[in-house]
Length: 100
Image (cartoon, rainbow, N blue to C red):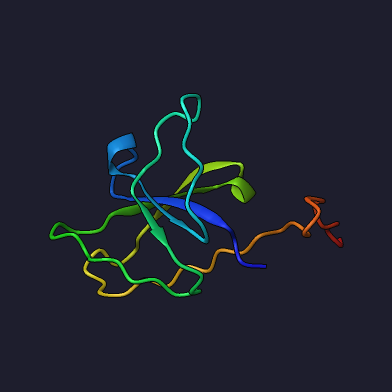
């Protein structure tokens, strides 16, 4: 199942540098806190503009990852990155059992 929403940031993890990709708009209310700029799409592939500086890392966070994690980029001059993000939950919110 495709992840319903995830946040990403390039090179540094700061609240104002976050961007969100989601299937639908985030509900905003007084208690929700900061909601980053959103890209609303149901496509499985998104393209973002590469920053001028070298890409050193990408920070990705979503509910399925239970937080934000940093992924180092081995080739900082790369023109294309491929990230596969999948949900590990069934529709009813149950975690799938891992097979050993």
